[in-house]
Image 1 (cartoon, rainbow, N blue to C red):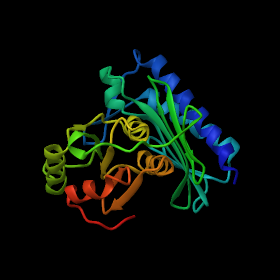
Image 2 (tube, one colour; image 1 turned 135 degrees about the vertical axis):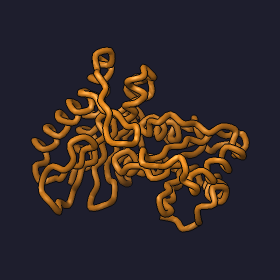
Image 3 (cartoon, rainbow, N blue to C red; image 1 turned 90 degrees about the horizontal axis):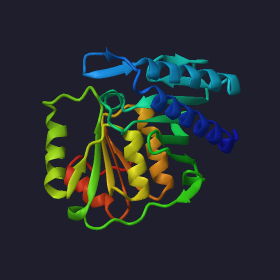
Length: 256
């Protein structure tokens, strides 16, 4: 499998989806999706249709899991693509400029190619397993952060997280008390780019969906971050900060 060829395709697909979303943002009508406050637009569906069509044309033996249209391709395929064609749809329909596209290729359950595209800023973060992380085709390494009490930490959670979730609430309260700021963009495609660039010092994801989590894990690791998966939690930070962050959240200490 030529991972670099797959990365180039994923970059192109994510950028095309982002450009289409920006072009259509004033015409996209919103629909409710599910029972957890999530929404969808025709832009989500059209972007996913285009991405699925192009992947199936180039990699007919691969499976695909799209956020909007579910599974495509052969069952039990060795390679599987994960697609979130419009990450941050709630922001999108509110006119908030934090939305993007996520395209990830997994070998079995391990991400080997990842792309996160910030659609309005037009920054594209991409990585291959063992090949490092790039921003707009330039190699990037996550810089060392300052102390946690002077740092901003990004937070994301799945839509199915209850407001009464005690585990989530305890961890969030501890983080908010200790860190300088907890950032909630509701767009992991933006958040993972912020941690890679060093704009935020860490990322905490709780019960997040695999199409915007697994790609972020690969991007962060290849940029030099340490990532730990503990139960329903994923925590990413520079190695100098990871232990303090995990201990603060009190969610365990087993590396994943």
